[in-house]
Amino acid sequence: INAYLTVLVSKFNQDGAERAFVVDTYEMTHVWKWNKPKIKIDPVFYKYIWGVVNKDHHWMLVVLKPGEKRSLFLDPLGESKRRVKQCQDISRHHHESK
Image (cartoon, rainbow, N blue to C red; front, side, top):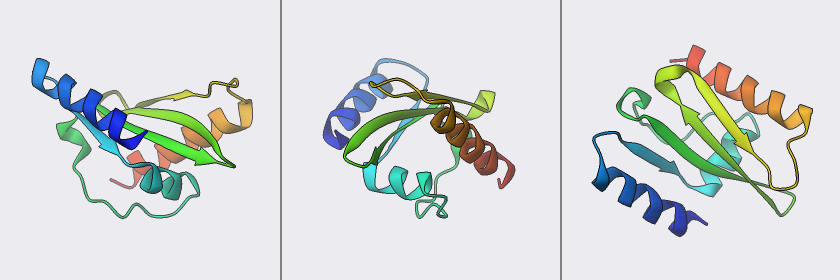
């Protein structure tokens, strides 16, 4: 999944003026568990920040839109209210800590 997202984002970055960044699955899952991010990026430079969370052998996509202070959470099995709220809370916490 990390390789596939990296290829997609690389193509996106080549095709237009907007930029995207991929957070690998290990780091995104680390952040999903309310841990402090280990990577240092300036989100201002990116239109999108993509990452995949692995929770109990299940994959979920998180897309952050830093400029709009918004996030998108996609779960192929359906987005539970609890997980959507967790995504919102983590995104909000990340934006407020900048």
